[in-house]
Amino acid sequence: MKVVLFLISTLAILAFATFLASASDPSPLQDFCVAINDTKSPVILNGIAVFVNGKFCKDPKLANANDFFLSGFQIPRSTQNPVGSTVTPASVDQIAGLNTLGISLARIDFGPNGLNPPHTHPRGTEILVVVEGTLYVGFVTSNGDGNRLFTKVLNKGDVFVFPIGLIHFQLNVGHVNAVALAALSSQNPGVITIANAVFGSKPPINPDVLAKAFQVDNKVVDYLQKQFWYNNS
Image 1: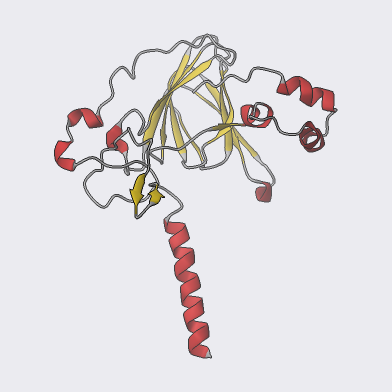
Image 2 (image 1 turned 90 degrees about the horizontal axis):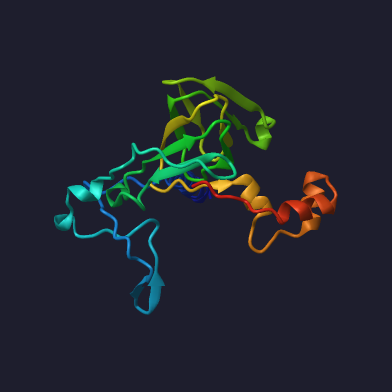
């Protein structure tokens, strides 16, 4: 009986350790694994459609420098949109050589008073550096931590970290344009803009659910669901 309990405990610990080890992008098993972007169709093995967690790799012998390269990242982007900001990603979708390397980059351009609205990256921690301008930034902790708000005003050269999965934002509090660069701990960190997801989902969330959750009248929810929720990324 003790042996059985020991084995069960060992298996539980191994399972938990495996879960922790797979909580972020998997480590590469070779020098690189340049992505093949044309993977709309799954691989069929023994009549079963098989998908991969990430992207398929091309033959390493066919890789070249362009697979690890992206130009024009320094070019300012237009911020003429409802939120006054534009996010330009440099993830595995733009740089095929990032596949399996567990890192990506983003450029964020802000017009005066521009906002990168409250959002979350479900698969990556973000570290941001201000290149130009002044930003008011912050993140909110989880329910178990009391939803504490951490904020800071960042100037040129300042760095701030947004932990994985937590809701965060950046607001240009200056009277001129601002630029920031953000590195993320995933080749494809994903982004969920809170307002877009809650009020702009397709199909819409039942208004009764949102009215109850936000403790407002259904008319307020109906108004918000009819708005155009701009995606700045």
